[in-house]
Length: 331
Ligand code: IMP
Ligand code: MG
Image (cartoon, rainbow, N blue to C red; front, side):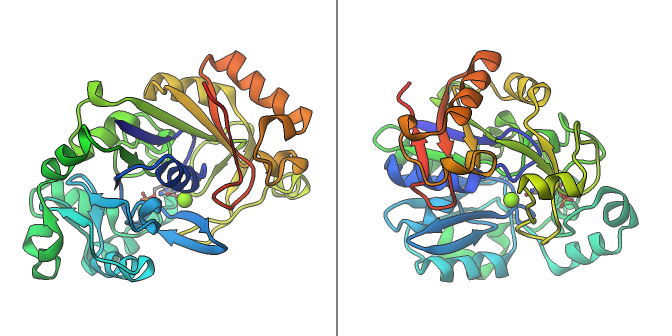
């Protein structure tokens, strides 16, 4: 069983929580996270907040094995800090060919006027490291002695879980930040759609059972670039949907749920089901609700409108920050 989780808008849809929920509650045995340290994934678990930039969020559960695939890029300091956060090294694997970001990559982005001023990059060195990789001079995990105990060929780990276990792949960022399918040049340095995610891991599209496309109940964007229907900061404040970036702390730009974006994201990712997060931000009485029957009627209508318009079932409905603040519908 293989499941992929993809962001449907501009990142920050709440993939981290959805991934932790699915991984832990649906008893996955292996969690894989693509992408890199520019993307922060947050999860509240047993009253504690965890922020991840390298590990998949369901790594908080000790029974779940963890794999960083060859297409991902990590920073050694962030990786080791997150291992401390989850309190284990057992069952953690890094592909030999995972890319390594260094101080020098970060400095290159910090002094890059185009990235810093025009694009609004998070300046975490990810794009610079990707560029080095394309030029075939980036150092990989296999070049670092301190990673030795974690090094694997991803395929060995995936094969072990493919038939007898359950594999959850956590993508990062969102469809319209894709280098190819997003709002170039206001995009990130990789393809973040389902196909790009699979390519980074090394799994063919026919082997995937579920693609969960995650939309937030409203759209946010950090950094520059187009945002259809953008609200003024005052309007966003009035609606109570102001958010701040996990990695940068910058306030996020806000727009209402957008069906044009959603339709396009569906074509780009071919999801089997949808997750709609932060429904409680729009419908306050939805906070913490766990059963469909208990959702306020406005929230139910909103979900039904999404299904009628997009023709993809909504399986997960996020109603708050805690892991079990979730309505799950049997499809
Ligand atoms: P970079 O990938 O850090 O260079 O950033 C390029 C653009 O993608 C900027 O607009 C960033 O704000 C945006 N971006 C990168 N990663 C994330 C993310 O995880 N969530 C939301 N936006 C992101
Ligand atoms: Mg984020």
